[in-house]
Length: 416
Image (cartoon, rainbow, N blue to C red; front, side, top):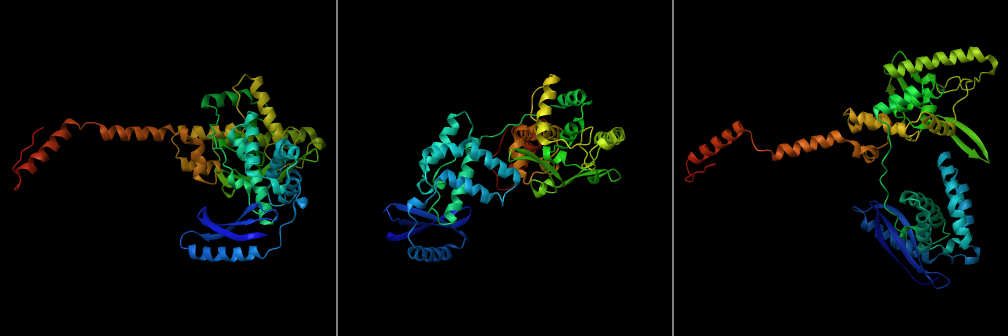
């Protein structure tokens, strides 16, 4: 390692990060970032001391491995995905694998880039290739996040000195405007699909604004007809592993806020009671052919089989086409529920609790443009502030002014 190791501090999310600068064995200037975890407020002296320690430690380190030992970045990404899979959700892992196969592997493998050779310009080229293919900024952000996370693991394990993705600006996230059905459109949907085996799935998702995994995860043991409640505490997901579709059922939702207990109301109580009666008839009708593995689940077909998530999405689209209904995604039933609540002047905070969002900002970001009632209140407040006073109020104000003018010390008179 040639030359003196230098360093500086900068703030990231309210805490100090150290940037070490040095020359590698080829005489090329390199940087390495180290998150110190020291708060910016009141922690500068401590951070400076830690920076000096890191500079001394880094000076004494063994020379970096030669470039020949650095793997191809495409191979590194593939290996990193296997390591990361043990610490992330199954659905996230599958999403990462799809991003890798769809674009990252062919993009970086065709360039034969080694891990140590990845530079900000390569990541910018990746961004531009995604945009050139007609994808939006949000897609770029997903790819950038994966690449950055993989590179950060390499930094933490001294495979590269710094993260080149940190020096690449992400595009601004586009605001998502959700599609939704009006009250009349939902009524038409319910009527058109009332005889379909998936009717209970559609209506529960719309009434409660449930995610697909949540509505499929509703169990009879979570429905309390006496207390009049239904608990959202279970989910059903589907993944493709080694070319095979696998169904997963688990008591693990998206966030802690996703666990919630909601009240039954006349429509949902009737819907659930009818579904329970249907299942009893089907069990008697099909006998041993009836599947009993999912006996506790509400959303099953005539043979007792649990609806698979991908089937729900695809069948919903077919139903809309068959009945000439406007196309929306199945997930848009959740947005339709939120929109109806807003139209009934339900406060945004209560909608957050109903939908199970982890933060208020999530709810506000998605639905604030639809909150017309709050805009009406603001308009009324502005109108009231600039409105001329009523005749009686004007006379009172004039009387007050005249009284002040008659008081000792005042020689000036005012007229209106």
